[in-house]
Length: 317
Ligand SMILES: Nc1ncnc2c1ncn2[C@@H]1O[C@H](COP(=O)(O)OP(=O)(O)O)[C@@H](O)[C@H]1O
Ligand SMILES: [Mg+2]
Image 1 (cartoon, rainbow, N blue to C red):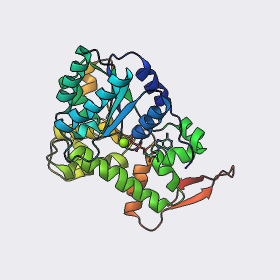
Image 2: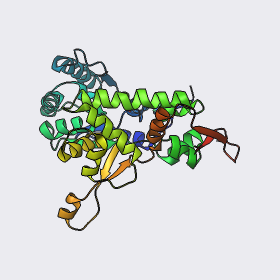
Image 3: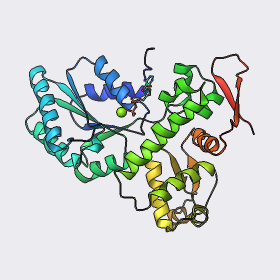
Image 4: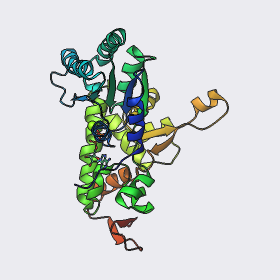
């Protein structure tokens, strides 16, 4: 396995960990952008004992589990005068924020030098927990989709390839097999995020509407569409308020967002129709839909003119 890329967030994490214990650090961002990888790289690099606990499998990941893991972290901190405790996928533990707050405050009271880092992939749930219980006691570090310069450095991609396929590093090795790549994006990213992170964890009364809104967002990316028009397109009963809320959920997952019109007057901003925008470089969501609808290979690949190994992909109808 090639050496992993050393992202800027790794440096930021290390700086924060090595500072004196002050706030809980929260690393959040969409699925599959490399949060778990980053923290594991960092734990290897720093010279401090650590305990990594993941709530990835939600069974039995409850308050008791959280306390047990915390206790392991505490022991390490006592033995070594400092330690790092990491909880991955923290949003999967119900009522995590109250428990974390209580345990963190106990450590503060006892002067225990245990640094705590929380990782989470559901922005809304993380934020909910943070504002409910941990207000004032944490700092956020956002792990975003990979940028062009990161792709250039690590994968040697050109801009076209990045615009088309960029964002999620785990999908990069698959781009020479477009069918596999599409399935990966569809199953591991889109479906998993919608069904696990959004539908399982947030109350959504009209899941079908949310899904359609996502696909509509991909098709209309870059265009201004009023909520009324969206409703017309979606053939589904729903109010504009519901749509606005669902768009917010999709935005929190790092998928599609609604950009309001800019105006100096807040009132006018609020009242504007959103411009739908697939996040940053996610043309590929549009690509996925296109392929789903047109199974007879609608794309073709050319070797890039510079002869680089990554193919440049062009729309082709
Ligand atoms: N620093 C990195 N260098 C190379 N590939 C990476 C790096 N970070 C993530 N990846 C790729 O992305 C995939 C998803 O990363 P992961 O850490 O599991 O994401 P997350 O925890 O945000 O869901 C990994 O399996 C790996 O293929
Ligand atoms: Mg992870």
